[in-house]
Length: 431
Length: 91
Image 1 (cartoon, chains in turn green, cyan):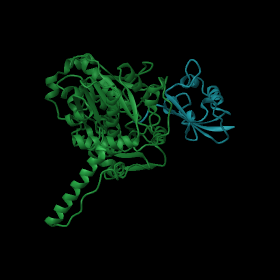
Image 2 (image 1 turned 120 degrees about the vertical axis):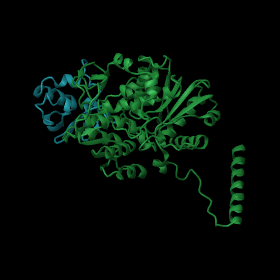
Image 3 (image 1 turned 90 degrees about the vertical axis):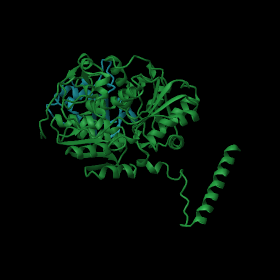
Image 4 (image 1 turned 90 degrees about the horizontal axis):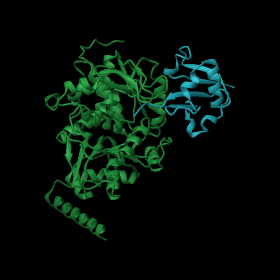
């Protein structure tokens, strides 16, 4: 089963530790505590990290998530580096003006490499660790983006791959997986059912499931979304972040990333507010937030935002806790608002995001309108996926090309017609 | 009545490495008591000190989460499949 022995560097992590009861385990392919079923997290030696890192060393490191490797749970000298991470942090002035904000940034993982979503971060870490632990086959339960990423990076690393997705995913997400020739199991059910099936399968074939038995390593990859924003803001934390909530893992790991940078002295401490975005058709965390509950009641998803349609979110309670203790908010928006969010970001910033990003922009707008984001707060919105993968969601809402003959007068007539249409639209807005 | 129970890896040390067990019980609550008699110690893993199901473990009866059914009072019938699954997965 062992692929190859990788040269090792001295690790900055020592064990896995239960987030609930504190029990410790060897850093193997396990993800829950045997005693209480709590999630296992990687335990680091922060004093060792503090000694090894500096702003200069990070800046001189690779142009990828591996510039932060001291904070990531791998030991290989050569981690799997496909250029993942260090995506643009765009100052979104036009969107900010439209909403009435002064300092708004978009962290644009719609252009993350190689598969155009933040999942490449977590998968790069998970597959590096999978290789270290001797797995030759990797797998995942996915709403689409993760399957794309696992299949692509497994292909690059020469690992066998079998992914599980709900059977009703968007065409772009299915194609964007099949092209890498993994085995694809399209499960007749929703994501929560896929997830349960994968939990049952996880340890039966000796596979490394990135978001099940490798989940403690995998989820750490999302911390790089925190590190990069801090570095790109000139080694400062923002005042407020808005991110999509599916399982809640990304949200909690951005928080952890910020806290670790403070812990080792790379940035000054600052209170960062954490706000989360869900689709109304699948909003178990937003519902718990609004009702003041400290537990999550699972729901059956029904929304176009399939990539975040998790009715039974693993880290829901932790996301809830972070939003509350940082004075953030968790809001939900309708499918129509999600489509408007996708269009608003495209029209103001030239970024075409998928439904999860539309949800996040729509929630940003809702929070600003409700006075829950102050115009002077430095606000960072996390856009985690690419719109080309969920074209079905906006089909019918984006107009059509003007078909013309290859003749000057045909062009002039069409241009006149389009200007008339534009004027009519303006008049409608004015009325 | 006899039901099939799928045991997750973290509990298999208590079931002699068995991934599935046949067990009796008219409800999930009864099933838990019967599991405890055949695999001592298993109930304490699944329930907290107050006897409530732990928040990081999910039970499914024929693939349906018991929180959409009747929780620990969910009735069981002959041939049902009960799956015990750690809540922490996915995303």
